[in-house]
Image 1 (cartoon, rainbow, N blue to C red):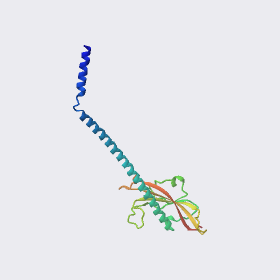
Image 2: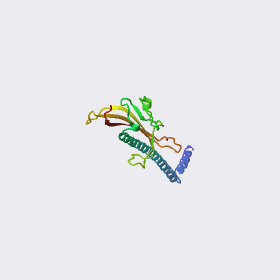
Image 3: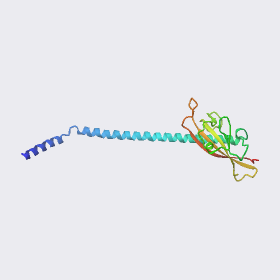
Length: 198
């Protein structure tokens, strides 16, 4: 009897396992599910990489705009002999242009020198129509006269070397005049050679 019972169980099991109806559909659905999940993963990864690349391009563009704005301000300082950029006392560091009204800060402290987010910096807006303009973006700038520097070779004692730090911040303002968060601020050293200071 025990033998018969085992034989009947075996036959029932063999009948159940030899029935292949529908197994191909199950394997096909599982295969498609795996391929779909793999495709979704690849698309998400590609979108993430695209976002990082876009942000990196925006950061680099803002940096290069800031750099070209610094060159533009340096050109103005170099070509101007008086007015806003005139140095009255060569021995005292001074922030030449600190606010839009042209006021100066003589002998600034470290926090004033290192404040690159000051909203009161003078602003140069939309230079796209100006001849020889290096940037068509709005930027704020600050000119800081550091002091006298060493004189490069080739100049005699009738000349002086005036050292400046020019800070520029490319920015965008919204309709209400508030500065948007996408900004890039850099400081560039600049040397102006001129007649010997007295």
